[in-house]
Amino acid sequence: MKSKVKSSPVSRNGFPEPKKVGCFKCQAEILVKFVIPRLDFSKKNDFYHWTNKEKYKGLYVCDKCILNLYKNEKLYYLSLVENPKKRQIIRTYIYDGTIS
Ligand SMILES: [Zn+2]
Image (cartoon, rainbow, N blue to C red; front, side, top):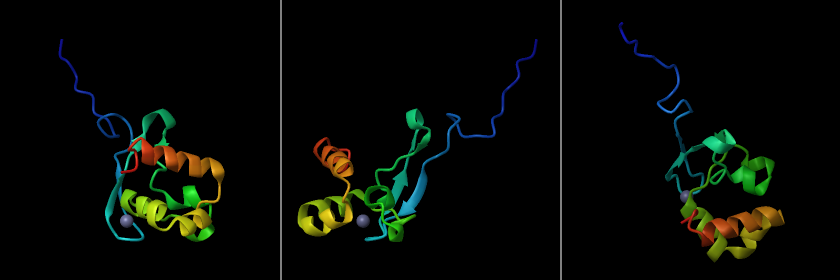
């Protein structure tokens, strides 16, 4: 009996590879991972996800720039991220090191 090697049209684990994007503030490269349990790309660096503002649709922001906004430009940050639940998530990400 011959064993067949299966070929797959998708990536190694069967899910999309991380995508490379650029931070809209400092142009740093960001790797957006595919989150398997959610079957979607990570929203951590998706600026529109946090702000819900049309003008930020499709823009990504790096961890450093989120931290900088949060720590050094608090009022501006609060005007950008108005949703209390999203503020809570960002706070958690910062304190647990997800955003670092
Ligand atoms: Zn940045």
